[in-house]
Image 1 (cartoon, rainbow, N blue to C red):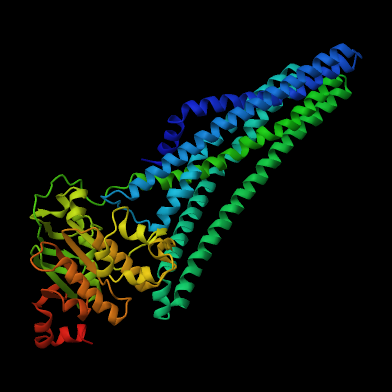
Image 2 (image 1 turned 90 degrees about the horizontal axis):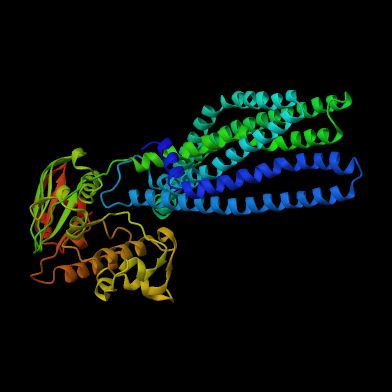
Amino acid sequence: MTGRRVLWRAVTRNRWQLSTGTGLISLHMVCESLVPILIGVIVDQAIGPGDAGALVLWVAALAGLFTALSMAYRFGARRLMLAIADEAHLLRVEVASKIMHPRGVRTDRRAGDLLTVATTDTDNTSYLLDYVPRVAGALTATAVSAAALLVIDVQLGLAVLVGTPLVLLGLQAASPVITRRVTEQQDLAGEATSLAADLVSGVRPLRGIGAERAAAGRYDEVSRRSLRAALRAARTQGAYLSASTAGGALLAGGIAVLAGWYALNGRVTVGELITVIGLAQFLMEPIGTLAVAPGWVAEARASADRVATVLDAPALLPEGTQTLGTGSPDLELRALRYGPLDGVDLHVRPGEFVGVVPHRSADGEALVKILSGRVPPDEYEGGVLVGGTHLAHLGPADARRALLVEPHLTDLFTGTVEENVTAGGPLDEATLAASAAGQVVSAHPDGLAHVVAERGAGLSGGQRQRLALARALTARPSILVLHDPTTAVDAVTEHEIARGLRALRHPGSGRLTTVVVTSSPALLAMTDRVVVLDGGRIAAEGTHAGLAVSDDDYNRAVLR
């Protein structure tokens, strides 16, 4: 998949609307070019001889011509706008489906940049369907005008036929520069958007550690780079537009001057002079369109290239085909090596509640990243088995049904509290109690109907954590992995969540499995056993109470 192929596909799958619209727009431009021709005929055939009857007939013909050009434009534009809207929608759906596919997408683009591709770039790509009929109409109008000028005088016609390609060829040299600078501008704009989204979602933690100034400085730097790229692109496009406008005006003006000279010498009639001057003025529009069209196409091509990089990106995870049997699966890590992890072996039995305490935060983040399916299997060594089957070999639906990972930084979405918790399913009051999310509900007059802003911007960090935990618990997966789910709540609420989590998922001889990666003593006290990661390996294992007595390093990490 390339940008050129994305553009070609846009043309081919909208060929009916595009061909009809292009034909009507070309007809509109033909009618436009016939207006000065008809006016010249009226002068020579009716006004010059003083024939009132002929004047009425020719004026009626002129009225019919204006009616035809108006209707052609109206219906042609309607067809083309429908095609543009359809193509933009199809591209947005394709890009969004690729990004949100359960197997993931392997790309270096961050979330904000992917959002830019899925919105701005898909729109820019679809605008090609506007540029094609404009170019076709401009070429048609130029050809009709040149033919009319050839009939009036061969040299006038040749001036158009030779001068127009020369102007366009001279301007074509700037097209690669425009493409390069527009691409740079769009890439840096996407980077700035991504960073802004990250900063907005993390504004409360930044305030907590006093890092607002550093974060603002980083965004200021990226924003300035984006601004400089936008100015470079604008200067290039502005210079190109100035050159194209000047070239078209000089060509049209030269034709008008030459026709005036011929009229003085009696080589053309008064009506023909009026026609030539009218055509010269009219030609500024199609020649100007043909001159700036390469810049338009360059911008569409730059956006199409960015769309193509997403559509052509390989899947993050392989196409799993195996399914899980009935019953509760276990979770097993075999000699797992990835990043700081250096041969982790861990077996979590069905129904077990296990705590994982990483002495280095990077160890916990690497473990959660692999379990959440954000690392392709060819980038780590060892295996992750769910129910005896490698996680990478499971189909996405089976994998997500058996294993759900709730990362430390989670997103809430625009909608009500209830919609964020249930994700379209039934509401479970027990999950609200276990996650202490009931406190969030009662804190707002609208309760479950309280509207949550994008990314939960109107909620505190603790409220966002509790709603995200409630959402994870509502899903009732066989294996639930939680990463630091209580870092933003107070100690009293943390103890309440720990007890609720134990009561909901491990009331007795249940078969639900829970793994919590944390250093919270309240949560660890509720687990069946605790595994300690140090130096990328399992350094200790036991109960929370036992490790607190026998392991000084554990004490320093957990009971500080």
